[in-house]
Amino acid sequence: LQPAVLLLSLLAPCTALRGAAARSGGAVACIDSAVQHRVPRWRDALPRGDELDDRILSVALPSIANLAVIPLVGAVDTFWIGRMGDALALAGQGAANQVFFSTYFLIAFIPTITAPLVAKAAGGGDIDGAARRVCEALFLANVLGALGTALLVLIPAAPLSVVLPPTAPAFEYARRYLRLRSLSLIPALLSSIGFAAFRGLLDNVTPLRVSLASNALNLVLDPVLIFGARLGVAGAAVATAASEVFAGGLYVALLLRRRLLRLGALLTPPRLSDLLPLLRGGAAMLLRQVALNVAFVSATRRTQLMDPTGVAAAAYSITNQVYSLGVVVMLAMQAAGATLVPSALARGGGGEGGAA
Image (tube, rainbow, N blue to C red; front, side):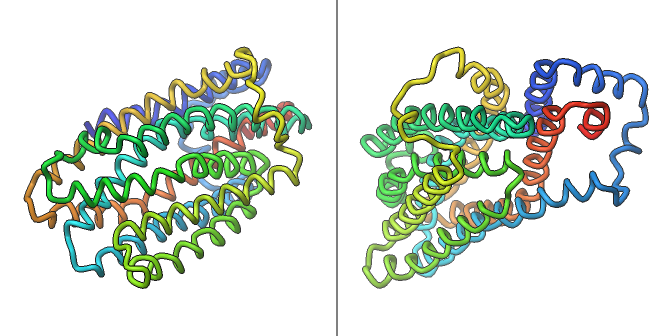
């Protein structure tokens, strides 16, 4: 599955950007001209230390720091659960996290498309348009998040059975963890859209501060709830859920302050025509997320079936944490492109088209 996943991960963002360029009028002609007349594109891709490189780094470096906070804290969760001395607890947490993040990422195509839409509106000076995009994304995320939360909280055994057989010794650990962890699905989506909105404004410092504050709370709560309150693996789920609720609340307050959010708009369903840019751009990203999750779910299930002691699954969970720390660099560069290109296209002009 890995070659197919890699191919889709490369094609999906290109498809979304091609659609954005096609809707931007004259800018697409500049891009097509660059493709036709500047054949050795690899030379243009090399860093030159110019203004464009500085802009890319100014967006990418804070994104790397921001995205690295989450796997680091996830590694801390794994560390404290590992200190329980029970491989089945670590295996159960790994299976539950896979189900939670598969559900989350199937919905998280929304913030992936929100960032370039906000960047395009803000780059053209249309702050009201940027606010409308944020409100539409939040409404759609709340609806889909509510459905996902209901599924994971009310009947966690059904989605868990995809990665973990009900007779597996780690199943009870996973069910308990997933039910509590899933209470934070909507706040996690709110945080992701808030991050995307600020990223669209080329502000990566504010999300970094929110991530540091919320994850510091998780770091404090983990040992207190796991060992102090003797909640075990459920304590880790409560700590993570509490930190994500805190982050979601912070983002709502910050979006209100920046006038990118109107609470009344969250309760008013947007028109279908207004949602079409999100849905059209999200289709390619959704396909990519499905391909990735099929690969990860398949690997998780196979490791869970390797041995009944949970040692193999626990080792796989630790390996995933190490992988997550490395992949943040790629995700940050992807985020930089998804904001800088629409922003440049929105400002128009030959120079900005060339920068795009």
